[in-house]
Length: 208
Image (tube, rainbow, N blue to C red; front, side, top):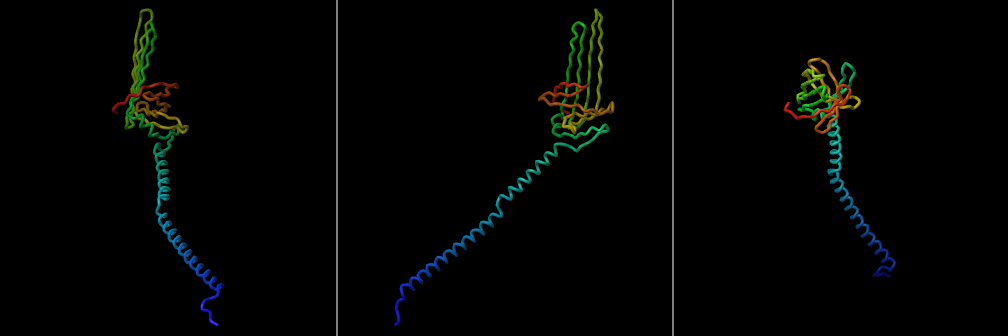
């Protein structure tokens, strides 16, 4: 006896198998699409900005380090063992300025005196020094006066000591000596240690 239609159980197996094949085929296509999409995203990501950001960060760090190094010269040491290095930023602040100090002493009926001290710091590293003092004395109707002047040429540098102090380094042509004076910038004024005490000078911009 030949059956025109398969039994119910057999038809169910065929249907299940057919549905499984369809699902299987659909799933494979989805997987293929996901693989293609992933490959595309990876190929695009290889040229994206993160690596460029890392390069920029590295370049920025290098530039900052170079700028920091460019603020100072190489370490030097004089015959007396003083270790120092040139401070280029401080040099820029002092270049082309005349440091002036006026002093007046009122002695009342006994007289008095005045003095002027100048340091001229030219942009090319040359220096001029000038000092003048006037003194007058009056005792019991008798009086007198005296004056003195001193000038010198040389060179100057703005330096930092090994201890971190900011110093004005001057070399005298007349006397052949080099001195270091600690300094503090105070806007339009500057304080300098001379003769073991802080002295205040006015800063005047000049064409030098």
